[in-house]
Structure formats: C-alpha cells, structure tokens
Figure 1 (cartoon, one colour):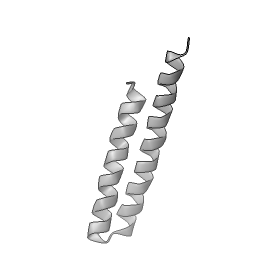
Figure 2 (tube, helix red, strand yellow):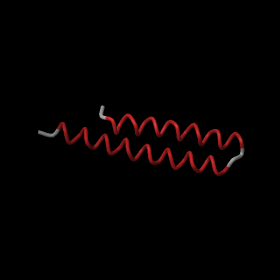
Figure 3 (cartoon, rainbow, N blue to C red):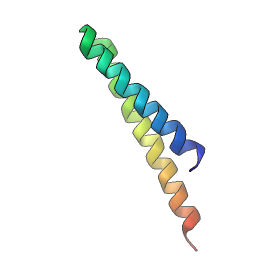
Length: 58
C-alpha cells in the first residue's frame, strides 16, 4: 500500500463519520462536508490503487 491509498481510506472513513454526525445532529452543513470528504477520500484511494497497479506492470 502506498501513502495515497492509506490517506484516501482514512479521509473516506472520516467523511463517513462526519456525515453520520451531521445526520444525527440534523446539521445539513456537516452532513454535506462529510460527503465531500468521503468522495475526496475515495478519489485519492483510487489514485493510489492505480499507482499500485502501474508498479505491478512489467
């Protein structure tokens, strides 16, 4: 695993938590911020996955 994969998955998890907190507290702003973080984390993790795939290519 490379740093982009790790950081992306951590950011994704933080976003999910923030989104859940926003739902629980009724804060639409927090909920949206959490969703944005989650999507950004997924994107970064996918970038890291692609980098790993390129390393494995002969």
